[in-house]
Image 1 (tube, rainbow, N blue to C red):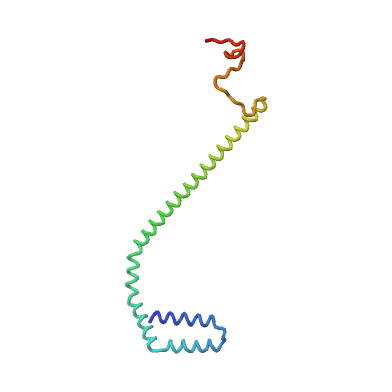
Image 2: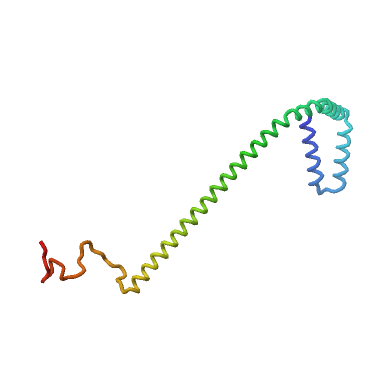
Length: 153
């Protein structure tokens, strides 16, 4: 009965709001709704619903009163947990941002140092890509394999 009433009310509202037929359709619908509302079976259902609500209202109010502290505690706990999770996430993001910035700064410093070394090498007349050989002798006269060298074996 309740579902039917809800459906009829919904259909009626939709019809009134969506109707383009004008005043005549509205008056016809209004008459049907008044007839429906004045129906003794409908009024009996309305009275039953009203009586049930009046009867159950104190019980529902008492139940809500009893459950309110429990629900409030659960809500408080959930809110605290959510706030903690949000703070942890914010800290992680902040840490990641700081780490990325430090890495970027370190890369900039390394690039700058490398650039400065290249610049200094060019200014000193050094070869752009010098090859360093292990055990190389700077003075050819000290090379034991060179002509006129001094082999010390």
